[in-house]
Length: 244
Image 1: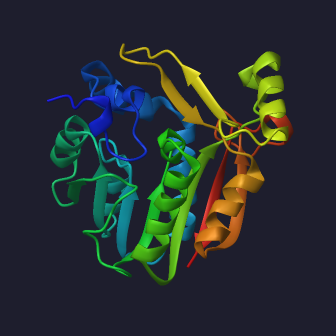
Image 2 (image 1 turned 120 degrees about the vertical axis):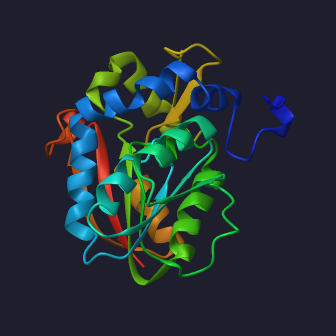
């Protein structure tokens, strides 16, 4: 049942709710991820830091691609997502993992210090509406990790040249004026439903979120659309490693 707007979970607007429950999106999600060099890049980045095998939490797990990959290597994997449709596919694809329907902003059912590794990939954090709510997601990752635990975060770059000169100029001025919507990019959905807003981050903002939660930032890797290291405005996003 679709809830009215006033009953949507914290950090979730109508556009995100519609996206998470779009049947066409869910049906084609695995094909999209398999074709994406960025999806391969974030797996590679996680592999470099998630050693040795341990307990792994995937925040915004979708159809469970991260859990599938690491469960096959002997990790105990737990995936969290708000989409029952996504989670149903995840459970089929990775039956040895645990999948939970929960809001990333509110993970009170998980015990403190219960994971060795955590990840929030493919700009999932950017889908969460509101700076305070995004900070809560990162704070939850910190709380749930054991001392020494590692957290991988993947965000989109606010000043990627592919956004277009007009949109980049708008982002620059909103940032300069410190507007609350600085970094937000709203677009129509390919799957119907309300427009989807995705927050794009500056490098400083992403690093600040991690350090503000208590993480020590060990690596920041700028990547292009091809998943390879990038520079300047060719940077499509950042892969960051925070250590608790």
